[in-house]
Length: 102
Length: 102
DNA sequence: ATTTATATATCGGGCATCCAATATATATTA
DNA sequence: TAATATATATTGGATGCCCGATATATAAAT
Image 1 (tube, rainbow over the protein chains, first blue to last red):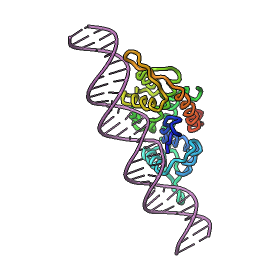
Image 2 (image 1 turned 30 degrees about the vertical axis):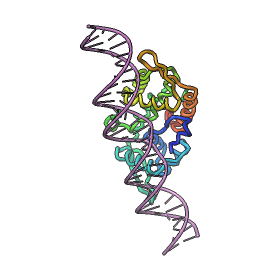
Image 3 (image 1 turned 90 degrees about the vertical axis):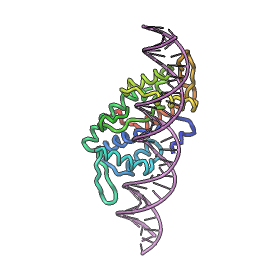
Image 4 (image 1 turned 120 degrees about the vertical axis):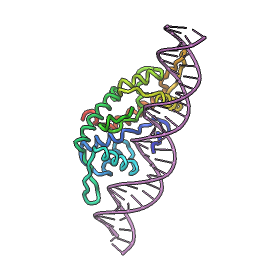
């Protein structure tokens, strides 16, 4: 993966934790739901090796909490996670100011 | 720096090549100019260890060309670089659709 | 009971983004 | 001439983003 489409474009990896926080701010989801939402946006579904360590890290930071329901684990933003997302959005906006309108 | 502001926010690293392509689409610049433009957006100036390998990689991909003027090297987008930026912008827009308006 | 489908989780390896440290080069100032 | 300022470049190390491979678990279908 990250094939760079045969050098048609620069590397677009990154900001995965941010994207996950944003997606979870819209609704709580389990791991593969999140992966499917990302697939819709990027055209490729991130592998378990990508998703689960990222979720683990976000949970460790206190931004997410888990709720086991049968065999799946639903992830929800904590209060701290919501704050982190707002801070992240401001940073994102400043960093990429003007990109979308150009 | 990527200090994470004492855990207030997730990791916001990434997309450096994309950001450089975008900044150079507005005007040609030398390395430290680019670093200063990024500093304005991120609040921290990327170090030479960050900027120069990234520029080198983009040049190697054919997205940039250099022009030496005295002691500085001015970087300019190639035609290929401009195309790459357009592709990257579309990917960026789809990936982060809705983030700025939320 | 076995097979299939789906979900969760980890690990090794590759690569980009970063910093800090180090080195070299050019131009200006003292 | 030496000191200072600025620019370019590389390297080692840390960390995150990724994949592919592997393993385990749960639930449904056969």
